Structures are given as structure tokens and as C-alpha cells.
Length: 424
Ligand code: ASP
Ligand code: MG
Image: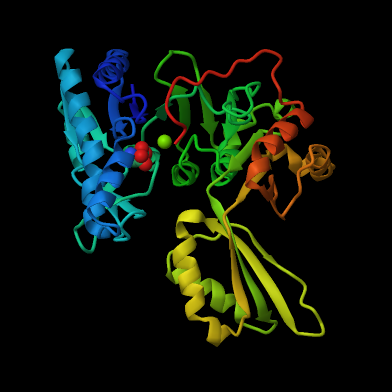
């Protein structure tokens, strides 16, 4: 049988008991005849604790050293899981991201994988061992320094390894039973999806559904890796995330709407009074790009004829807020805009579904659901299979619940099971 890559999140390996339970699960998979490669996250909230520790030492930890520190979290779990497997009488070897051949660029804190050469993992498999790999880390091709891939990126390590090893499946073990039509913490009547296309999952991840790291889904889509999201606390089937051409095996049965996602991590910047002439938007967004700021929604107003000025608003991760404001302030004279406004009391609510391509009226129904719930829309953006709105932060839950109900997504019986964790 083929290779199975399994990724266990922080809540699954939170303590010694969890580590032993996970080891048993890994051994069971091995006994079924699969070669098993495991990717682990740091135990529980270790990554946050290490961050806090760094901040107690210095308000601005040097990025190189912060990465060195944070990667220690995953190294603890990988060694402990390997020990627990050995205790069960099976061969296991742990590897850091660097040893596993995860080669990245040199952007500390959010490095991108540029290549994987998993020679040592293949060797371990050939030797009959279970390979345990530290998630969320790699080594820079240029500087040879240890890098991290961004919060939650152990998922990405797992899918990238699955692609490089030609694995049959990448199983992502987490603290909820699969992908739900909405966050069960907000909508108790959310339903578990049996399958969802990578295209839809990509939109859900980009819209703030925290179940999978965005880049992991991008990888899965590009390299055709099937993902099975499930809980490590139970043996029930979770959600299969399948390549688009395999997900709608019976298109008649495909749901129109896959789910409602929300995001509390964004902020909005408005550049007020931008001269309406060629090249201004390019200058603004080039500046943001060179500061490594990821932009989400962008809206430009029609310029007022009398003044020849326009406003440009965009959303971005709150954590990039300061560097974005700083970068924009430096080009104020050059661009000639009036002022900058910053608002982080916002949230994004998104409706996602491949079926909306062929069903008219989805936008109208979404907006009227929000209206009936008294939710005001601040910004709108759409893709072929997604509609997103920016609302006041305090109205996110109401907006998600109202939308979920309006699209008949509520289950009659509560089926969602949250097994633990903080949802981080
Ligand atoms: N431990 C890292 C984090 O907390 C990576 C991960 O869990 O995926 O973000
Ligand atoms: Mg995660």
C-alpha cells in the first residue's frame, strides 16, 4: 500500500496522554500496511507561550532568533511522538524541517517553501521506520538559517510533503470532526461536509475558516493531493477535500452553498484623497508589496469630478497594519494623498459555494438576510464562487448565523463536535 501522511495539530499532542494516543493511531495505520509519515505541531499553546516569552525578553525579537525559538515547539513534539511509537515497539525517527528537506525562501516568520527534497524521509521509510517531521519550519536556501512558514503552517508542511512523496492521502487531524458549514462555535447547528472541492476549500480558507492553512490548500490544488480532515479524538470519517474534477462526482447532488466563513483578523486602511491619475494605485500597492503586506479586498471610489480625488480602501491582516501604515506614510508626498484612516474593528463574512456560478439570486438572498438581521455592509467583494462582506466586528456572529439560516444550512439536530482546543 502507499504512503499516508498524517498531520497532528497542537490540541492532539497537547500532553503526554495525547501523545500516546496519537502514537497508537499512527501505529494502527502502520499495521494496516501503509508507510506512514507524520507531521506534528507544537504541543497545545506552546507556540504562543514561546512568543510571549520572547516578548518578555525584548519587545522586538530579531526575526531570525524568533524563528529559531518557535521551531523548538515542533521539535519537542516530534521527539516525544517518536519515543511514544518506540514504546509501542515500532521504529520511528524524528526530523526537523531542515533535515526533512523543506527548503524555503529567507522571509522569517512567513517563509515560502520553494522546494522539498525529502531524501532522509524516503530513506527512513525504506528502512521500515515511521518518519516524524516537525511542522511549520524549513531552512532558507540562501542564508541557511532556520525559518518558519507562518502560524498554522504545519498543515502546509504536511501537504507539501505528501506531494513530494507522492502520498495517497494527507490526513489532517484536528480538534473538530471535519469541515463544517460554519464555525460550530458560533453556529451550533452547523453541519459537517462529507466532501468539498479544493476550489471551495481555498475560498473558505482565504475567508478565515481556520480549519486549514490557506497555503496548504493551494498546494493540494496544485499537486492534486487529496486531504482528509478529521479528528484524532474519534475514528469517524471527517471531510474529504478533493480535486475539483473529483469532488462533484454527481454534480446534480452538489450543494449550491458549501458554507459561511468569517474572519476577525483583518483591518481596513483608507487612503483618502488620492489624485485620480495613472500609476497612483500601482505606486501604493507596490509599496505595500515590498513591505510583504498581503492585501485582501480593494475598493476604489468613483472620483469626485470637482476635485479629481478618489479614496482607496483595502483590507489586510491586522498584524500587518503597522508596517502598512508606516510604508504608506513614507510615500505621502510622492503620491500626494490627503490622509490615512485605520480601522481594525471590522470582520469579514463570506458565503462560499461552487453552485453559485449557475444559480442566480444568491447575492440578493445573502444581502437581504443581513438586512433582516440589522447588519450593515461596509465593503463587498466577490469571486465566481464567493461573496464577502465587511461588517462591524460586533456583528460578525449575527451575520454568520443569519446567513447560515437563510441558506437552509442549519441541521435539525446538533451534530458538531468540538473536541478541545482554543480555535487558534
Ligand atoms: N505551531 C505553529 C502554530 O501554532 C504551527 C502549527 O501549529 O501549524 O502556528
Ligand atoms: Mg492548525
